[in-house]
Length: 268
Length: 321
Image (cartoon, rainbow over the protein chains, first blue to last red):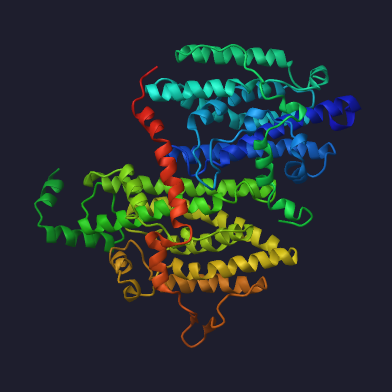
């Protein structure tokens, strides 16, 4: 399918899917960028900031696909929507920990590793499906993104396994982080209210198929590191794909748009 | 082996003469080569300060990473701060090799930073309150860094010279990224131009300070002279500052910006820029950790170092799965 051959209902579903893909990467890239200079060691600062930069680039690719579909300029889409127009999963907007990136950041590395690893596993599954998307520009973007995402997944998997199998303190912190992420990770695994139209048009695989892949993979990894699989992840605070969000998203979008919003019409 | 044994039999003075002959002949000194203790200490001082400045230098720009005013600018500034962190890592590795025979490592570098013993560059102690500052830092601070680092591309210490080659190549992109931000603002609305001029006013004295005092008498420090003797560097602070003026003042003027120094002019007779010198007592205060953002930025690092202690312990204790 191309832009010209999309039927109106398909276009609507495609736009919804693209917002999910773009906003997921945009918000997690932002949370990652807040870590710069605060990571556990300098080598990690270098690696993590490279990953965040890649992810911001992925968001940019998706926003550009939305621009082509008539959603307005990519910069406007990224910076000027109100929080209820965002389609990212709630767990991805959550702050890194107490404090802000400018003042007294008591960020939680265990939470960051777990959230990023679980997300990277899902993103990999999602991209693997999107490579065969019926919408050719999306399939092409997915193929491009996948070459970078391969390393992100590897990076977070190493962190996850190392911290799950070292000191007692690390295991405790990681276990607590898994429990925290589990409460809302279901939001990442859903395609939201337009799910049927999205799947019918073959933009991406059925969410149940991808969910199963994710659960199988995570269950196996947890077993490998001697942890138990807590059952399907939940969506306790609501579905971000429906525009349900927390205060953390408001804080994120106002930071992200602080300068742009002063004058969106001018060049920066 | 024979050569090594005979070298070991030389007196300290003879070793020193041999060493100076080598650097004067343009040879590179490598980590395992004999070097006078003083040379090693000068290198450790210079390179750990340079490395930690790259790392602390990521912090003022990081303030603007999420706020960068377009997706394109966000991507560019993310790439830039990532580069800076990479430069820091590269340089600290060079410093660590030099420190190893003294029984010191990365942990000592971080502790020295936290205690104030290891200083970082004056510019990174300053406030960066607007997006204009992100532009000025990338354009002029990185521009100044290119000038001072290019001089050391032929440094007598091989690992440092090689690290600088890569660093300088990336800094050129940073300065272009900065220039692009500056151009957009200079051609933009009156508010944008005003923001830009404010930033320039704020950063000018820091830029004068960037290259260090004209001579030892301003700060009572003669490291620059020593480093010239050792061929670690080749130009004086003032040579570098003049080069900076020659390269950037015409560009600043061509954008219609005003330099906040009404005495600045090029003197045809001496072929030098005449300018208002910085307040060097203020400089000493700033680099001693009393600049407007010194303690805030150090606190960010101290706090994260402490918060992540458990992570480093976990990595050190790693069991095989």
